[in-house]
Length: 377
Image 1 (cartoon, one colour):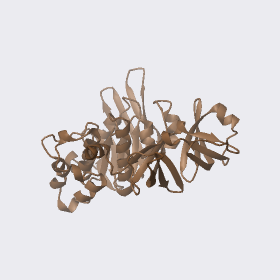
Image 2 (cartoon, rainbow, N blue to C red; image 1 turned 180 degrees about the vertical axis):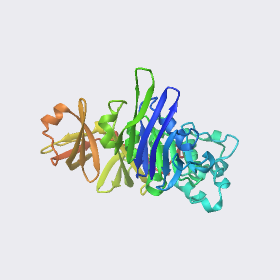
Image 3 (cartoon, rainbow, N blue to C red; image 1 turned 90 degrees about the vertical axis):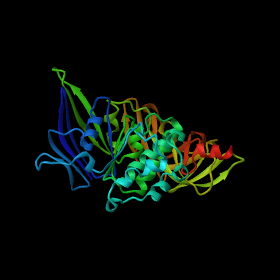
Image 4 (cartoon, rainbow, N blue to C red; image 1 turned 45 degrees about the vertical axis):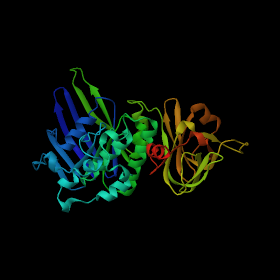
């Protein structure tokens, strides 16, 4: 779907890119100054490579130095979402969303407004002004506006940056919904490995090195599934947390007990109740370092989530190890080297995964928190 093989020189900065990805969501991650923004600008046609190839959808050359192809920015049909949204403040939400849609030929309109309004839960916001929106709502409108241009590729530049924990989880859940329900290829840029790991199928790790002449050389040092580049990424960026994200549906709500049951594929999850309604689609998120692994016979525990499983694989990072366990879904836990040895963990070993319900963060789509508060008031 995406083939990038080009070189750019700007002053004392050289960018040498080689990325070939057939994944729906391709991530770009790396330290500040590694060339992520430069790469995006080249995709958009704002910066032109000195040589090489930029190809999308397997056959469309946006740039090709051998054939002379260099499609102008306005004809590249790329949807772009920046972290500052760049909505038109004088237009309503509806007019913001339809701005690009109304300016492309009817034959190019592959996505319809009502479908995108529903997908991003925007229907109730259409007649509002931009100033009346919360931060998360603005981000969803920016994503919807980009999608309604029916782009060949959706470019997402740090879309979760600047959002607090709850808003970050909510926007990530909508991005996962887009990934699952649309076939549009995406390029996702972030400096946060947890975001990349949650959304991307393939990730390009970009690094920058400085030579004795103070020239900076940026390149892709690793390319593969996020799990496969984790160890390499940890050497050049901070990998603070690894998250597990599971899609499911609210099965039942025990308001008296304060818990909800989420039915996921091959797994039932107990979470803290939070304005849930039975039947709602949702995503459940919990950190790898919030998991306890147990081997042998279980003692009586207060934890609501105790899942039997088998160890699948290991990823070693300096003083800790990421253990992937199949419990019907694959989840990842962080353990120390001492725990790894004491539990005698090895591939295929039977274990129990234990997670407290209050360690789970749940995003129920279509139940916007601000809206619920307004209705309650």
